[in-house]
Length: 91
Image 1 (cartoon, one colour):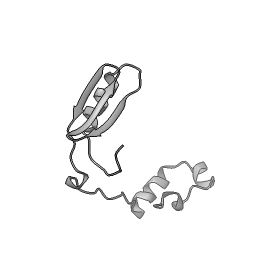
Image 2 (cartoon, rainbow, N blue to C red):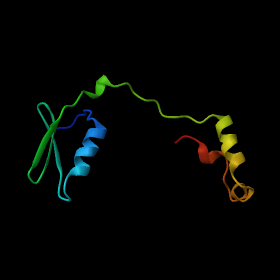
Image 3 (cartoon, rainbow, N blue to C red):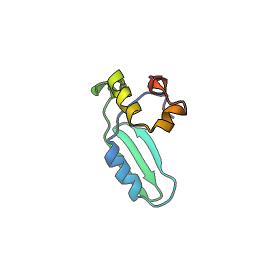
């Protein structure tokens, strides 16, 4: 059993492989050269890259302008029902 960590997997390729498999248990395990995908008689491997090879994507922030535009699109009943600018604040 792995002791933790992170890696990257080509998401589209992984999705296509898993989608094509029969309706059965799918096992995805890390091995020395990437990840192993197995189900019934199917066995395949995908290359991985370290997480550090990819930039960090900042969380989106909403400007006052954007918030005002969304509130302007809401029908008046929605605004009266308690939808306010706090609804859009970042968590």
